[in-house]
Length: 167
Image 1: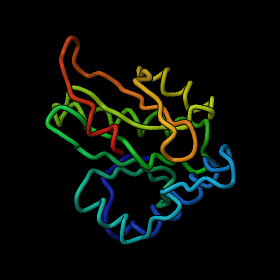
Image 2: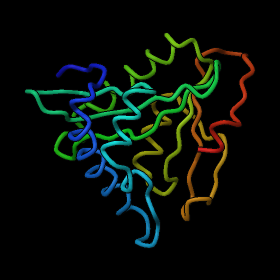
Image 3: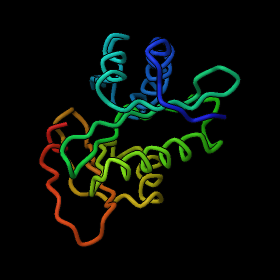
Image 4: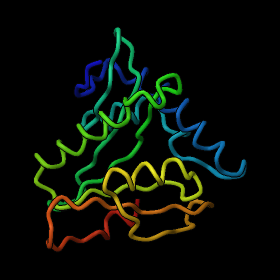
């Protein structure tokens, strides 16, 4: 498996993988909830590749995982659209992608990384705790309880998480 920056030519495949993974995420919620990842287009993926950091895990020429990073401020990055192929779940693909993303954030010299996830999706919440993230706060703004997880990259540093609260 290789973990590399995404190319625009991979946008359709990233889009498809994201839809599959986030459909599984939605199944952990109630049916009335809208999951924004399921509404994005290939053009949205292209825009992310052009403007943010999009990383893919590739095995035998097929994308099996992806993760996106937006640098919100000089001190804060935001991880979103983290997806792994269901066939690869539990095989370490996600952990390798997240480690790569954290290294990218360290190179960006941010002080903290933020992400949101469903608090009732126990497996995901537990996963992020195991990777050194902690829950900063929760919100019900999307029709389900989402936790804002934070991973501090610099100890005893001040950083403003306000931009992440708006995501």
